[in-house]
Length: 225
Image 1 (cartoon, rainbow, N blue to C red):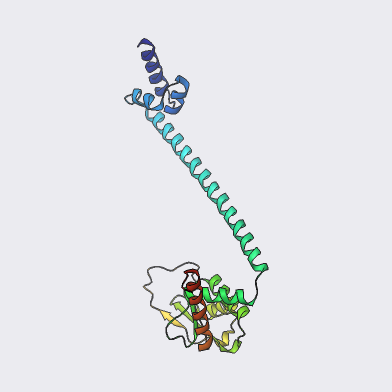
Image 2: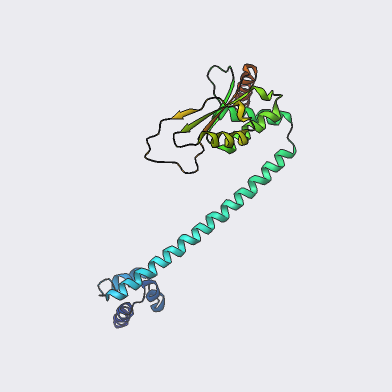
């Protein structure tokens, strides 16, 4: 009992001197929960409370930084592995592979109503570029059949956006039709938002072929045939 009282008094003295509970526990060989209970009523001067608070913030900040470093490390590992897989797949790619890729992208983001034309719309330049690359690699196309329709907000510069989307899609600016202007509340302007591009290719047979391909893929993996 006397031994514990001596330790308790020592803990109180160390706490009043500004030492943290984990350090006191380590020094006295006690559990942190026990030390916390012992020193809970120990009054601390304002400057000591501030110092302990700063130390706690510093510790949390260090923890956040370490977690961020770990997240970035794992992301880099994922990106390296993804590139390895894609590179291995592309080595074996042929025209059938690109037909397959184009059909799956069309399945996700293509226009399905009527299927009188191939319609693919998105605001992600990388996705537009990937779809058109696969489409051009997988099928014999007539470039003059392409049309581009931009969906823009009032704050967009139409001429600048036409140049941007023409470069992304490799569709001549002269083949862009009248842009659609979306209503804008003017409460918020999306930084680096380039609007949306709807790509049209006037060929019903191609649209229906893409539709047939992705349905065949779905049926095959689900065991329908």
